[in-house]
Image 1 (cartoon, rainbow, N blue to C red):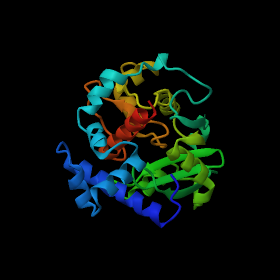
Image 2: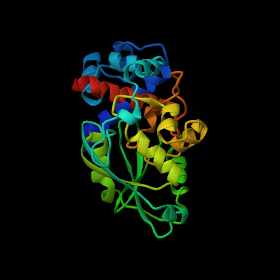
Image 3: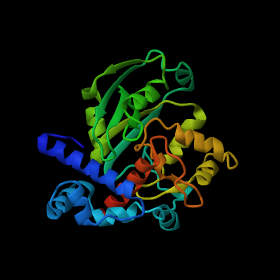
Image 4: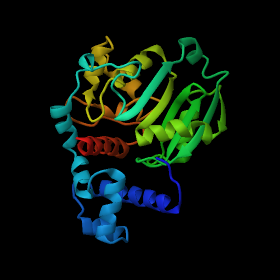
Length: 282
């Protein structure tokens, strides 16, 4: 999502504040008038702005954020990964008009902790708060969200994964992929840097269609380790390219959200955002 000027930047900040207010309210839904008053906007202006950016009304979005939404997703949109339609390299993990290409770094290169890698990074706005993107000339290798943990913690987390790499702030080198990712249109490339088992789990995540979910036990089954749910959960949590490798679509069999590396409010917002887009496109 590109921010082109003062008005867009203002609206981005407004929507971010609105989502924080909604999340803080928990199960107590806020009326349109309540939200508009907290954001110092007229109800009509706030409704138009929110709907234009999120895709559905504030009331509908709050319904997606309720705690039982995950249970409804499992009941209605559960995906058996071995029957998911596969297209090209990307599987069905892409949303709408986004074409996702990926490749995995060799085990030997992973073991070298990023030695010899030149990694560009930059900070970008996203529907889920400020995002830190990292990548090489071969594709994005990192996508983190700082809304819950802050910039410093997100940056330390990502750079600590490849301590021998060289990092340079070059947002323009990554901008086309990042904007394609959040606009869900165009092409984004991924470079997956991880241990072989982790990459196998991330490949399974890429098969989960947008707007649908699966369980940690299902991921364990399709990776050939049906009793290794804890190891699978750890691999999901170590996914370096959040959102594009959709670890937010993995839930507990009970309907619980499970964990999320960048904070459960971000995970809930991602699931709600995707559900809203699916409803809008239907």
